[in-house]
Length: 408
Image 1 (cartoon, rainbow, N blue to C red):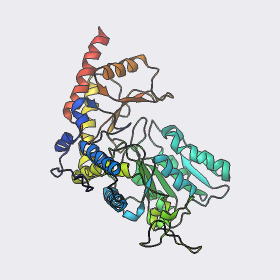
Image 2 (image 1 turned 120 degrees about the vertical axis):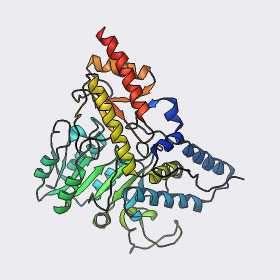
Image 3 (image 1 turned 180 degrees about the vertical axis):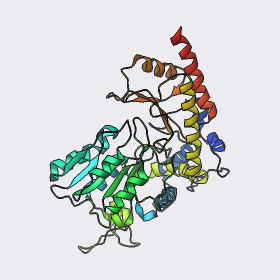
Image 4 (image 1 turned 90 degrees about the horizontal axis):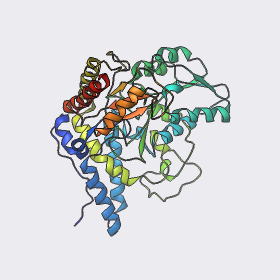
């Protein structure tokens, strides 16, 4: 008899070391590629297989699927210290960013502030599109030594600024934004801060009850350690009530406990908070897959995970410097996170570098079974709770041998 109950994870509280055993991929290779996609726990595979089998047998009830959605909504809200009504399910980061951007009642001459060279294109094209549609001004700023130019962003805000947008952690070179200071300033100026949280959420701690971010979009395949094809849009309740969703469906409309196919009249009310942005049925399989990961993240806690990855980052940076390798922004500071960038300058290429030495190092690490990526000319080594000191030392050992051969 197959059950439709959630697949639970038994984990001693607060232990990244214990959690590593739930990720088979961590035992099969040195995995430093969370910035591309996180490892998925074995419990997610079991949960997926169970739901698929129930669908094959035709025995799953949709009410059970909606119960999964409710648990996952509450789980993600708990992870970032938000209210469940402030969470909407999306397809990915890009969809969430577009939902928020297109819900603002733009007027010609309004402006948005961003730093395109540090953003994924998914957080650039929506603003160019709105420029063409509504005549808004896209105010672009240059990075400061590879860092998000928070001071310049704050200085650029004026009485026509509607949005400041940035990545919580940039995907290249992978530095953390001083998001608290930026959020507090935007809140004081009544400007929406819209954050691409893809690279940080699930790994670095954030508390929406204390940090006044207006809206943040994430996907589930990176720090949330699940599948492609699903994400979450957080919108602070007071901001959600000011926005006009670009799309509407039955799920966006508040008809109380009525069936999902129940119709309403012209005088309809929107769902509370961010739930007004939800359109149609959910990616139930992806929600099933992320639930065990959220269980692990909640049991350990992101404060513990952040401390863990920062300790590993420090160990790796010191080791690379001892081997006289260039580490991008190696000094301690608010920019430090779970991504260590090897290289001296950010380039234009997506997945290669013009530096033959860095390209040789990347090939050597990859040939030795270590998983990492190059983004914009920088070797990007990204960590999560399933990494440990042995992983770091394993990378450094490979680099040490490579260094010896380079010197010969």
